[in-house]
Image (cartoon, rainbow, N blue to C red):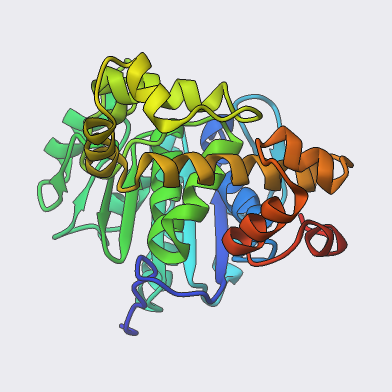
Amino acid sequence: MKFAENIFSPNDMPLDTAVLVLDQSNTLSFAAAVDPMRAANRRAGKNLFNWTFYTASGDTASLTSGLTIQGAEIAMLDGCDLLLVIAGFDLEHHATPRLLASLRRLHRTGCTIAAIDGGPWLLARAGILDGHSATTHWEDLEDFATRFAAIDTRRDRFVISPPFATSGGAAPGIDMMLHLIAARFGKVLATRVASAFLYDPVPLGEQGQSPASAPRPVRRNPQIARALDLMDTHIDDPLPIPEIARRLSMSPRSLELRFQTHLGKSPQGYYLQLRLNEARRLATDTTQRVQEIAIATGFSSQASFSRAFRGMHGTSVRDLRRNPRR
């Protein structure tokens, strides 16, 4: 088998990605795989993911919502960096000898294979997950663990066991994709992608699957959560950090320590990143003038805003707008 690149290591090279979509896949699971790639490309200002759609037989795949996906037969694919397998219902029907043979062949090429919802089941049926840790949708976990004894079945939302990544459904699929983006292209980009969806990701190993969703880990600390809410609602008129601490009935030093512990940043650093991310959104999504963006994100002068913007994003608002993006 060809040596598999660890795509979960830092690397600026774009990923050649194949997206295999099976009939009766959940529409949200499909979006969980594709939309984080689209948003990563847009937020990065360049193509970090180049993807092509495939189906099991070359026929159109119908999602549960009635949407249809066209693509070449997966047997025609010679290789890729990342194969995303999206499946939902009728898994035994989809597990044809031809499809399973294609999965085994692509595994031998050394690509990373990530599977969402029912996708891990197909990888298990192909026999390529043996000896690895994996998960699948919570409704099927017990059956999966019983049937595939050679796999270390986990109840986690998603599991990374290179060269495989498996997740238990749509929302865990987003978590998995954000983990991939953070590991390969940086945590800042992953945070910006998550913020584009107003999504609070659950880090690897933080939470098992259950029928009910749970709040993000930082919400376990209500004072930090309240500080974030205050920052979110005071973008245009930033509150001094001592004032935020006062409103939380804590000292500025205690607030500093909690931010460093839970978010890995100082309150000042996090607040500035929040404001400059909003500035980038305004620069790409509106026609506001630079001075208006500066005022909307709490900067007292256009010059100080421009320095801060270039320092974080590596470009000016004007140059950013000259480069069209997806």
